[in-house]
Length: 356
Image 1 (spheres, one colour):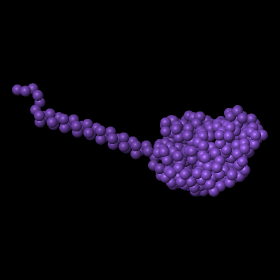
Image 2 (tube, one colour; image 1 turned 120 degrees about the horizontal axis):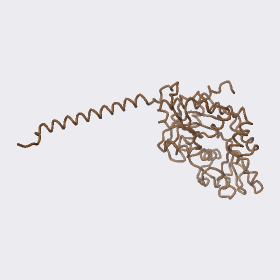
Image 3 (tube, one colour; image 1 turned 60 degrees about the vertical axis):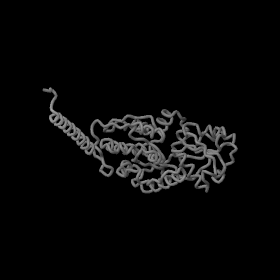
Image 4 (cartoon, helix red, strand yellow; image 1 turned 90 degrees about the horizontal axis):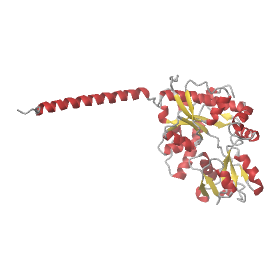
């Protein structure tokens, strides 16, 4: 008599094992699904009022870190913050992709390019300048001998261009204002970091480049004897945003922490404006290594911040930028409103209400 079990018994036992395994897997899947349903915050759900204990945000906003330190607010958060020395669109987007950052400070272009490259993000805070034309972020640096005195003179010139950053979009808007397209000039792709643009102008690698910050002041001083100048562009260039990955905002704890951070960010912006001397000494001189004169120039250039409670106008301007970039790059036209998380819309303005 054979010692092997009967075929019928073997089949039955295998079937029972399979059912047990399937039931276990189904239960695990159901639990995982239930957990996900419980933990994920819907895009239209109200923001949680409280930040759970143990929550941490990784924040790329170096200037605000200094402002919060100087104003004595750095330790007032109800959650832990890990400060990342990250700024600008390319660095911030790279950190998002590496899961190394929760929220970053940028201008208006990074959210557009992140979306175009498959990284869903949302803007959660917006800040502008009260008098943006008289307090521009950038001026056009003109190389010695380039012969550019007005925007009409840009035709045929070599222009520094940084796709994916505010400076690149600004130059496309400038060309449009001048009645030109990118085919009427030579766009020279260069990173806008450090003194790259200044050196490119001084060496005549380019004829025109958008200069920001203290370079607006230093460039004509250093190279003016050779014929270097700057000219205004007359276009709004003042958007400043906080943005985060959409997936981060689906975490209820982080979404609540970001709401708290947006309020602190707004108060920090107001504090900087109301305490210019402390800001010059604590940030521009001690942190950035600039002279007091350079710090004063930058404070005067920035002017008073505008943190609106209604983003309608900002979104409309953002839509114009998207359509311009889409036409120039061949990317699809996005709906600007989809880039904003309106649950955060009034938080910054309310945080500084009465301080204006």
